[in-house]
Amino acid sequence: MTTALHVRFYDVTSADGTRLRCWTNDADGPTVVLANGLGTNPYSWPSLLDPDCGVRVVSWNHRGVGGTERPVSGRIGMDSYIEDAIAVMEDAGIESAIFASWSIGVAVAFALADRHPERVEGILAIGGVPGNTFATMLSPLHVPRPVARRLTRGVTRATTVAGYPLAPLVRRIPWTNATTRMIQKSRFINPAADTAQLRDLLQEFCTTHPAWYARLAIAVADHPRISLSKITFPTTFIAGRWDLLTGARDMKEASDRIPHSRYVLAEATHFIPIERPRLVLDELKLLLAAVEG
Image (cartoon, rainbow, N blue to C red; front, top):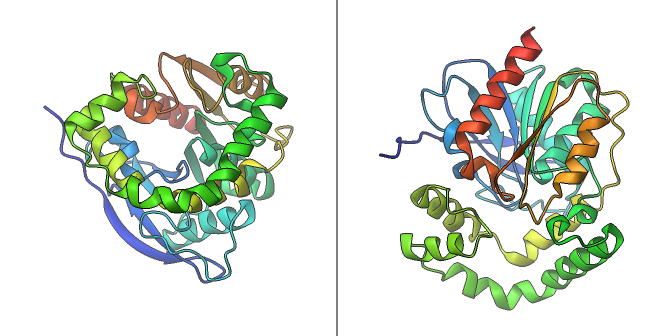
């Protein structure tokens, strides 16, 4: 039987006046700040929404996603995401914390650590790399990095236009257990994921306009590789063997550049938090213990 998940939403204003839709699991335990993937939502992390998970999670939805407003100025990109993270931390009274991160959120967490090292005590990096994201895509298909970068960036840029006629169709998709299982059978998301939890994730994900999502992706994925030379705190990288969006090889190389970093290769796709929720919670607790130690 699926555990009842708990999430509480609230609003915080970022430095430039953008209203952020934030969320927490209200659990007892050490506090972790979560930098999520673009367009994703709390339902991506079922093990961290369990009231008995033993970790207090504080996070936010990215600009124009899941109740967070689009900035009036149209301002997006790494600078704004770092400001959003700091605003969320300050509102919650968090001076520094361990970051859990996924996909583009990994780049956000490492960029924050590079610019404000006093804010970050450790990073759990799941299915993401510290910058130059487009070059890591399609790795399981053995596509050369320069080709992968040009191809995926081109498709994403085309979506900034094609996303407008697609939006009404995407929003009308009836996300039932049956349609969710069709996605799982395609193997883009591992069938091991809980169908009901995945349905909630996909239903919420499809509320984001495709063209806006593409703009967000370009603004952050074009950020250059972040220097890891100053990283001395504990880090853990969890890569998916079948991840088409972030290559396991690239994650291993990033992990190898950080002294004493832990690297885990999971039998999963890009959607590790919902496919392997127990692994995510176990590795997060190991990281917490390493920081405390």
